[in-house]
Amino acid sequence: MKVLAFAASNSKQSINKQLATAASQLINEADVEVLDINDYEMPIFSMEREQELGQPAQAQAFFKKIGEADALIISFAEHNGSYTAAYKNLFDWTSRIDQKVFQGKPMLLLSTSPGPGGASNVLAAAAGSAPYFAGDVKAQLSVPSFYDNFDPSTCTVTNPEILDQLQSAVTLLK
Image (cartoon, rainbow, N blue to C red; front, side):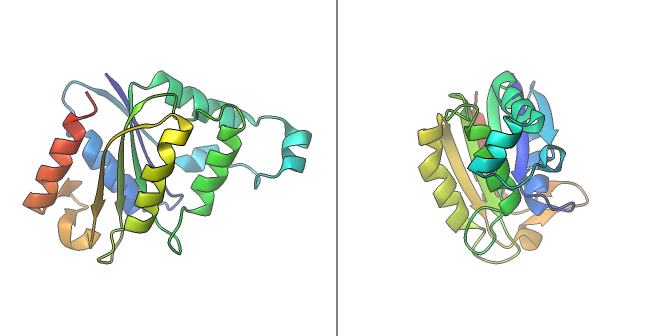
């Protein structure tokens, strides 16, 4: 099984990338690739830019990566209650290649933040919209108070209840 994991964040120290990586490590016998969406940075999408540029190579490469995967793990950072600008822009460009961005792949959707909300607003938006873009959401999990429930030095969830929930969610991708 090939799993593609990434954070919907362009932060170099993304806690969501840490969470997506930790989740992907819980899948036995999987070929896991953890992407950095910084590798797919493009100009801000607009119809005029699309007419001028066509489909940028970065959007095509991102769409191809999704297509090559058997399952997806995405962890969403929340900026002012919504998607990060970096992820939304990548998604917008990619959706112009094919509205079925997620290509029918089983998905585990995650979110986390330093605070008690755990980026649950953006997670709800992502889970609600994924089916419209051919995403098969198998599970979703918001991890509140990241630094109280995660050890960045070992890339592990330290809260036993959250770890159990994450392990259960990961098994649904198979």
